[in-house]
Length: 217
Image (cartoon, rainbow, N blue to C red; front, side):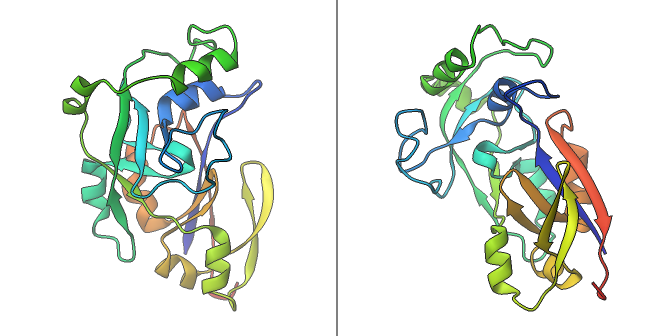
Protein backbone atom coordinates (compact mmCIF):
# COMPACT_ATOMS: atom_id res chain seq x y z
CA UNK A 1 0.00 0.00 0.00
CA UNK A 2 1.25 3.46 -0.85
CA UNK A 3 1.48 6.18 1.79
CA UNK A 4 2.11 9.90 1.45
CA UNK A 5 3.61 12.58 3.69
CA UNK A 6 2.28 16.12 3.30
CA UNK A 7 4.32 18.74 5.18
CA UNK A 8 3.84 22.48 5.63
CA UNK A 9 6.70 24.54 4.19
CA UNK A 10 7.74 27.39 6.48
CA UNK A 11 11.12 28.85 7.40
CA UNK A 12 12.32 31.79 9.49
CA UNK A 13 15.54 31.84 7.45
CA UNK A 14 16.33 31.12 3.83
CA UNK A 15 13.92 28.56 2.45
CA UNK A 16 11.28 28.03 -0.21
CA UNK A 17 8.56 29.69 1.89
CA UNK A 18 9.22 32.30 4.55
CA UNK A 19 7.18 32.11 7.76
CA UNK A 20 5.29 35.30 6.95
CA UNK A 21 4.02 33.88 3.66
CA UNK A 22 2.93 30.71 5.43
CA UNK A 23 1.10 32.81 8.04
CA UNK A 24 -0.81 34.76 5.38
CA UNK A 25 -1.53 31.62 3.34
CA UNK A 26 -2.62 29.21 6.11
CA UNK A 27 -4.00 31.51 8.80
CA UNK A 28 -4.29 30.56 12.45
CA UNK A 29 -6.84 29.26 14.95
CA UNK A 30 -8.12 30.30 18.36
CA UNK A 31 -6.70 28.74 21.51
CA UNK A 32 -8.48 29.00 24.83
CA UNK A 33 -11.09 31.30 23.33
CA UNK A 34 -8.51 33.82 22.13
CA UNK A 35 -6.32 34.40 19.12
CA UNK A 36 -2.81 33.05 19.85
CA UNK A 37 -0.18 35.76 20.10
CA UNK A 38 3.08 36.53 21.87
CA UNK A 39 1.17 37.61 24.98
CA UNK A 40 -0.97 34.50 25.44
CA UNK A 41 1.08 31.76 23.77
CA UNK A 42 0.86 29.62 26.91
CA UNK A 43 -2.82 30.27 27.50
CA UNK A 44 -3.73 26.86 26.13
CA UNK A 45 -1.85 24.17 24.27
CA UNK A 46 -4.90 22.78 22.50
CA UNK A 47 -6.75 24.58 19.75
CA UNK A 48 -10.45 25.28 20.16
CA UNK A 49 -12.76 22.76 18.50
CA UNK A 50 -14.61 23.29 16.26
CA UNK A 51 -11.82 25.33 14.71
CA UNK A 52 -12.27 29.11 14.86
CA UNK A 53 -10.08 30.48 12.09
CA UNK A 54 -8.23 33.79 11.76
CA UNK A 55 -7.56 34.00 8.04
CA UNK A 56 -6.40 36.24 5.24
CA UNK A 57 -9.21 36.03 2.68
CA UNK A 58 -7.01 37.19 -0.20
CA UNK A 59 -6.73 34.40 -2.78
CA UNK A 60 -7.80 31.82 -0.19
CA UNK A 61 -6.76 28.29 -1.17
CA UNK A 62 -8.71 25.03 -1.12
CA UNK A 63 -6.25 23.32 1.25
CA UNK A 64 -4.77 25.26 4.18
CA UNK A 65 -3.15 24.35 7.50
CA UNK A 66 -4.01 26.89 10.22
CA UNK A 67 -2.31 25.96 13.50
CA UNK A 68 -0.92 22.96 11.54
CA UNK A 69 -4.43 21.48 11.25
CA UNK A 70 -5.56 20.43 7.77
CA UNK A 71 -8.58 22.41 6.54
CA UNK A 72 -10.27 22.08 3.15
CA UNK A 73 -12.89 23.98 1.20
CA UNK A 74 -16.42 22.70 0.84
CA UNK A 75 -15.85 21.43 -2.68
CA UNK A 76 -12.89 19.34 -1.50
CA UNK A 77 -14.79 18.11 1.56
CA UNK A 78 -17.60 16.90 -0.69
CA UNK A 79 -15.18 14.70 -2.61
CA UNK A 80 -13.55 13.41 0.58
CA UNK A 81 -16.88 12.35 2.08
CA UNK A 82 -16.59 9.00 0.27
CA UNK A 83 -13.56 7.94 2.34
CA UNK A 84 -14.43 5.66 5.28
CA UNK A 85 -13.20 6.60 8.77
CA UNK A 86 -12.50 10.20 7.78
CA UNK A 87 -14.01 12.85 10.06
CA UNK A 88 -14.82 16.30 8.69
CA UNK A 89 -16.09 19.15 10.87
CA UNK A 90 -17.17 22.57 9.64
CA UNK A 91 -15.02 25.47 10.81
CA UNK A 92 -15.96 29.01 11.77
CA UNK A 93 -14.19 32.15 10.59
CA UNK A 94 -13.65 34.20 13.74
CA UNK A 95 -11.61 36.80 11.84
CA UNK A 96 -11.43 37.43 8.10
CA UNK A 97 -9.23 40.19 6.72
CA UNK A 98 -7.74 40.83 3.29
CA UNK A 99 -4.08 41.57 2.61
CA UNK A 100 -2.46 41.10 -0.80
CA UNK A 101 0.90 39.34 -0.87
CA UNK A 102 3.13 37.52 -3.33
CA UNK A 103 5.62 34.74 -2.68
CA UNK A 104 8.42 36.71 -4.34
CA UNK A 105 8.05 39.63 -1.90
CA UNK A 106 10.07 38.37 1.07
CA UNK A 107 9.01 41.21 3.37
CA UNK A 108 5.33 41.34 2.38
CA UNK A 109 5.66 45.07 2.99
CA UNK A 110 7.15 44.77 6.50
CA UNK A 111 10.77 45.22 7.51
CA UNK A 112 10.88 42.72 10.37
CA UNK A 113 9.15 39.46 11.24
CA UNK A 114 7.87 40.87 14.55
CA UNK A 115 6.13 43.68 12.68
CA UNK A 116 4.62 41.16 10.29
CA UNK A 117 3.22 39.03 13.09
CA UNK A 118 1.97 42.03 15.05
CA UNK A 119 0.05 43.09 11.95
CA UNK A 120 -1.56 39.65 11.68
CA UNK A 121 -2.27 39.42 15.42
CA UNK A 122 -4.15 42.72 15.43
CA UNK A 123 -6.41 42.14 12.43
CA UNK A 124 -10.11 42.55 13.20
CA UNK A 125 -12.96 40.84 11.44
CA UNK A 126 -14.28 42.34 8.20
CA UNK A 127 -17.90 41.18 8.18
CA UNK A 128 -18.27 41.88 4.45
CA UNK A 129 -15.70 39.18 3.63
CA UNK A 130 -17.79 36.36 5.09
CA UNK A 131 -20.05 36.42 2.05
CA UNK A 132 -17.07 36.03 -0.30
CA UNK A 133 -15.62 32.76 1.07
CA UNK A 134 -17.04 29.28 0.89
CA UNK A 135 -17.48 26.89 3.80
CA UNK A 136 -14.34 25.19 5.12
CA UNK A 137 -13.96 21.88 6.93
CA UNK A 138 -11.39 20.54 9.39
CA UNK A 139 -9.99 17.07 8.64
CA UNK A 140 -9.51 15.34 11.98
CA UNK A 141 -6.00 13.85 12.13
CA UNK A 142 -5.15 12.04 15.38
CA UNK A 143 -1.61 12.68 16.68
CA UNK A 144 0.96 9.96 16.19
CA UNK A 145 1.05 9.13 19.92
CA UNK A 146 -2.67 8.32 19.70
CA UNK A 147 -1.97 5.99 16.76
CA UNK A 148 0.64 4.20 18.89
CA UNK A 149 -1.92 3.82 21.68
CA UNK A 150 -4.62 2.50 19.34
CA UNK A 151 -2.28 0.11 17.50
CA UNK A 152 0.26 -1.12 20.08
CA UNK A 153 1.17 -4.26 18.13
CA UNK A 154 1.80 -2.51 14.81
CA UNK A 155 5.44 -1.96 13.79
CA UNK A 156 7.41 1.26 13.67
CA UNK A 157 8.84 2.07 10.25
CA UNK A 158 11.67 4.47 9.40
CA UNK A 159 10.57 6.92 6.71
CA UNK A 160 11.79 10.22 5.31
CA UNK A 161 9.81 13.22 6.56
CA UNK A 162 10.91 16.73 5.66
CA UNK A 163 14.57 15.70 5.15
CA UNK A 164 14.73 13.73 8.43
CA UNK A 165 14.34 10.02 9.13
CA UNK A 166 11.48 9.37 11.55
CA UNK A 167 10.39 6.12 13.21
CA UNK A 168 6.61 6.06 13.23
CA UNK A 169 3.87 3.43 13.48
CA UNK A 170 2.89 2.65 9.90
CA UNK A 171 1.15 -0.33 8.33
CA UNK A 172 -1.64 -1.17 5.90
CA UNK A 173 -3.91 -1.84 8.86
CA UNK A 174 -3.23 1.59 10.35
CA UNK A 175 -3.83 3.38 7.03
CA UNK A 176 -7.10 1.55 6.44
CA UNK A 177 -8.52 2.61 9.80
CA UNK A 178 -6.73 5.99 9.96
CA UNK A 179 -6.45 7.52 6.47
CA UNK A 180 -4.69 10.53 7.99
CA UNK A 181 -2.72 11.15 11.17
CA UNK A 182 -0.48 13.92 12.38
CA UNK A 183 3.13 14.57 13.26
CA UNK A 184 2.55 18.27 13.79
CA UNK A 185 3.42 20.05 10.56
CA UNK A 186 3.49 16.76 8.64
CA UNK A 187 0.55 14.48 7.94
CA UNK A 188 0.68 10.79 7.04
CA UNK A 189 -1.97 10.27 4.37
CA UNK A 190 -3.38 7.17 2.70
CA UNK A 191 -3.14 6.93 -1.07
CA UNK A 192 -6.93 7.06 -1.46
CA UNK A 193 -7.10 10.33 0.46
CA UNK A 194 -4.07 11.80 -1.27
CA UNK A 195 -5.40 11.12 -4.77
CA UNK A 196 -8.53 13.14 -4.01
CA UNK A 197 -6.72 15.89 -2.10
CA UNK A 198 -3.61 16.48 -4.22
CA UNK A 199 -5.23 18.23 -7.24
CA UNK A 200 -6.32 20.99 -4.85
CA UNK A 201 -2.99 21.38 -3.00
CA UNK A 202 -0.78 24.37 -3.79
CA UNK A 203 2.61 22.67 -3.57
CA UNK A 204 4.33 26.03 -3.24
CA UNK A 205 3.34 25.76 0.42
CA UNK A 206 3.62 22.00 0.99
CA UNK A 207 6.34 19.38 0.62
CA UNK A 208 5.37 15.89 -0.53
CA UNK A 209 7.05 12.53 -0.03
CA UNK A 210 5.71 9.03 -0.57
CA UNK A 211 6.62 5.37 -0.20
CA UNK A 212 5.29 1.84 -0.12
CA UNK A 213 4.30 -0.20 2.90
CA UNK A 214 3.48 -3.91 2.91
CA UNK A 215 1.71 -6.21 5.37
CA UNK A 216 5.04 -7.90 6.05
CA UNK A 217 6.39 -4.66 7.51
